[in-house]
Image (cartoon, rainbow, N blue to C red; front, side, top):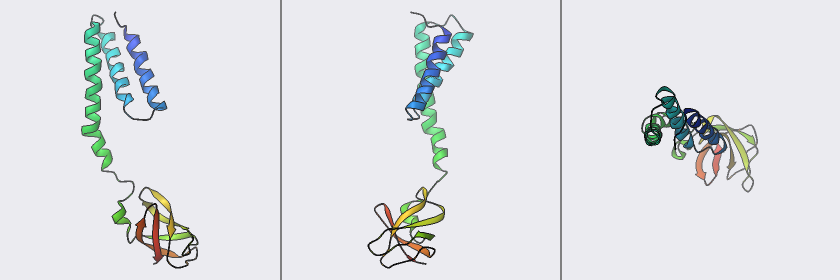
Length: 147
């Protein structure tokens, strides 16, 4: 069986589109590998089917390795939020009143743990509009007191 250049291009585009439906950020590398092989077959039509499949496999794996070794590390250096230990002491604005057995809502100027607003709890009643300081992270809630 021989593969035409357009088969690789169509397969590559299908894999890249499949990445939109299944957002794993993994399928795209196989699609880009197929697009690369399609381009190579267009330039060198005498490339055998075995060489085409080997080139696709190597190109796809090389792109995956390149992503995990080089590019992904540079993305991880850009921090969106902060670690939960760094949250202690952050000051925010209470936008929803909080009471001892009632949850409130606090908003921060910059995202804390990936979000600008958090549900909070407190040991005393604090009215909305007060500045509060985070004293602990308890599960998915921030424990606050007046700043």
